[in-house]
Every structure is written in C-alpha cells, then in structure tokens.
Image (cartoon, rainbow, N blue to C red; front, side):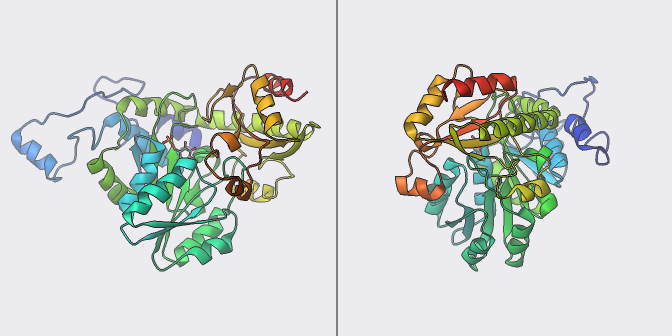
Amino acid sequence: MTDKDNSDFGFATRAIRAGQVRSEENEHSEPIYTTSSYVFSSAAEAAARFSGERPGNIYSRFTNPTVRTFEERLASLEGTECCVATASGMSAITATIIGLLKTGDHIVSSRSIFGTTTVLLTNIIGKLGINTTFVELSDLSAWEQAITPQTKLLFLETPSNPLTELVDIAALSEIAHRHGCLLAVDNCFCTPALQQPVSLGADIVIHSATKYIDGQGRCVGGAVCGTKDVVGEGVYGFLRTAGPTMSAFNAWVFLKGLETLQLRMQAHSAAALELAGWLEQQPEVKTVYYPGLESHPQHELAKKQQKAFGGLLSFELNGGRKEGWALIDATRMLSITANLGDTKTTITHPATTTHGRLTPEQRAEAGISDSLIRVAVGLEDIEDIKADLLRGMR
Ligand SMILES: *Cc1c(COP(=O)(O)O)cnc(C)c1O
C-alpha cells in the first residue's frame, strides 16, 4: 500500500515515513481525510467493492486513508504484518477478546493490569461466559498452572503500573504456545521504541495510543497489532461491524506522535532514571520502584527485554496517606492527574485513586501502600521536577 517499501529502514525513519501514500496533490505532510464515505465511478464498481471483489474504500467505519497510514506505520514499528486502529485503548482490548474468543473460552491475565481492564474482564467479558483467572505477573509457574484446556489467551502489561514489575515475555510466549494459546501484550508503557513484544514471541500487541503514542495528552485512541489471520480477520471483523474505529483526525495526531516517539521515549527514560536515582537518596523516601535502578529485582531482565526503562516510576515515603497527600498537595508544577505518557509530569496517589475501589486487603496483596506515589515523568526541566517533589518532603 505504501509508495516505497520502508522495511529496510531504521526505526526512526519508519516512524517518520512508513505508511504514507501521497495523493495527486503531492502534499508533503499526511492529509486528514475527513470523509465518512467514498464515491464509485459506476454501479458496477460499487458492486465490486461491496462484494470484496475489488479493493478500495467504501465507508470510514471500514477504512480511511489517514487511519490506514497510522496503522501501517505502527505495524512497521511493532514488526507485525498488520495493525488495526481503534477508538480507544479499551476498545482495542475489547475487540481483541470479542473478535477472537467465544463463550466457554478462558483467559489467563496478569493481576497487575490497568484498572478498567480488570473491570472489563470481570464484569463485561465475564458476562459473555468468557472467564478470566488472574495471576502474579512475574510468576511463570502460576501462569502455566492457571492454563486449562479452554484457555485461548494470555494477557499482560510489562512493566506493570504503578510498581514496575516485569515478566519475561520470551519465556511466557513459549509457555503460551506449548498450550496452544495466544499471548497478548499491552505495550502502552514501553511502546515499540523500547520493547517489541512480537520479536520476543508474543502474538498480539495492544496499545492505548492515548498515552505515549500521542505523547501530549490530546486524543483518545488505541490499536491492535499482529498477523493478518488473527488481527486482520478476527479483530478487524469485530471492529468494522461493532464500530469502535479511530477517527481520521485522531489518526493524524497519533501519526505526528509516532514521528517523535523514539526521541521522546529516550528523553522520558533518561529523566525517570535520573529522578529515580535522586529519590533513592532522599531520607524521606523508603523505597523506589523503577526497572532502571540496580536495586530493582528484575533490573537484568529489563536490560535484556527493553531498550530503556520508560517514564513511569513510583515510590513510598516514610509514613502513610497523610505524608503522601501532603507531598502531592505541596507541588506547584506537577499535574495531579492519573493520565500518563504526556510531556507534562503527572503525580497520583494510587491507594485513593486508581486502586481506591479495592479493599485494604486487596491493596495490600497488590503491594499498593498508603504512602505510595506514582510519577509519570514528563519532559520539563528535571531540576524543576525535583524541586516540586522536595516542596512536600521537607
Ligand atoms: C490507559 C490505558 C488503557 C486504556 O486506554 P484508553 O485509551 O484510556 O481506553 C489500557 N491499558 C493501559 C496500560 C493503559 O494505561
């Protein structure tokens, strides 16, 4: 579909150029095709397109040139045959599960996943008769023990949010394939700039493009990457009929995001590494969770599996909720919001926000203490971020 084959170019080049097809106007930047439908040259042409006999656009719930450019570019970066864009990260997960599984099938999922994904699996997917068993992310034997003859899909995020725990994707994909299951990785925190799950053996890569792919907190969107068989048929089949597709405008914003993705992920990672090391030296800080630190129990795995360590870290203060809230409320610059992947640094208190609906016992089991603070490190001057955190510490 592309005017030039980009496959032999490096990552940064493909992030800027893959998937673009110039129109007759010879525009340099990618155009936004804001059209819901497309016209045919004749009744016979319309019939041939509708029957699938001839390829081409029919309606933007099915295909749109701007959205297709985004899909081809992201597929190129993840190293997959195919990518389909969705209206949000949640609809990417929903489309994957409903597109590929049926009543009676079973999912094994990491326990440490995005809160809304847990609600989706438990309350909505569960209602369809597709049940999920939740396991400890890093415990490979727990994954294997949870697999039943009905299991079709293994689902995870690595590193986890907010405690930055990892799983060995290559080892888990070997387990998945031995049992005839697909492995799906929500690659939202690393993005393909830092981690390419398919190169490690995973079958499906899911994204909330809302986060680092956008990178500036503007649009909600998502994507599913994988083979033509699995994603191009199963997942796309659900999308074109059920309808949670990406808009052309949002696809264009995400395309511009991809162009700077590698630069931004390197800068987020460098800032987070410096901040994590600095936090470890503060007497008020009890523990820092960041895979880039030598003190992180899976630091070696992170070095092997990721190109850098990402922008997300968390830390515990001496004390409890009072100290945690005091630090957050003393900040002058950081944004108190649960979003992440933005140039603006964000700060949250997981125990009373993202994990607030868990019982104290469930929170303890998940390792979310009352003094835990999560920071998604942005691209402001690092000294300003440190100064803002110090305001509430001393
Ligand atoms: C935000 C997020 C989602 C959901 O994405 P939306 O775009 O908000 O629907 C899924 N997974 C992870 C890891 C996320 O951070």
